[in-house]
Amino acid sequence: MKKLNVLVMGLLVAGGMMLSGCLKEDNPVKPSNEPETPQIDERVEVVVPEEFRTEIEQFIPIYDGVTPPNVEGAYYMDPEILTGSSRSGDSYGDHYASEYQRFSNQDMKKNTINLVRVQGGGIEWMKGAGAFISGSENNFTIYFDMEGEVSGVPVKEAIVVSGTKTAEGVQNLSWGFVLKEKGDDPYGNVVDVGTYRIFTDEDGLSEAVEWPYAGDERYDARKHFVEGVLPLSHDVK
Image (cartoon, rainbow, N blue to C red; front, side, top):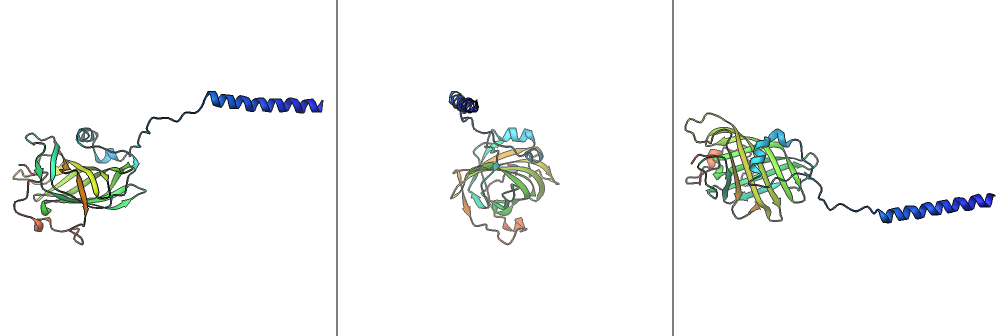
């Protein structure tokens, strides 16, 4: 009887193993070919109103995801061209003054980063600290609430910057703003609040360069003014 029980138990175990093997063969687990949906950082909506994101996505790519590349450094957009606008009378393809963008203090865990941008030799400048970056692989998008000055008028803007990091710099570096607030503008030199504009580097590559304002983070933008610069991104033509 003992030997019979052992035999029966052995047959049950063997049968169970065979059944398990058949089920695995009949119902293999197939890896999904569907790409994973990138995670979206909830901070996006704090900086960029949903309607603005919807508008600018028509003109520049927005890269979601929480594993962006390291983009610290300075890059030169030379020259910028207008690729999108909500302002009547703007012409796509128009040239604007070249500008430097400098990204620093990137925190790879919190996905925060700082930006300083200087355009037209300093007549327009913006600074934003602690803003955040999204993306994956070599693609990135940065969101900023920024304060600065345009033609002597204090302004506040929501800014979005997108591109693809390469060994030479940033490919297809594009940026857009929506003007959220502006100070006293008696001569109407700055576009209306609520206006947005989108720009990109004309040749598609913004080279990595040395930051020309090293040691002068709070420089007086006006002392770098150069006569005859092209129209700036917020100046009314």
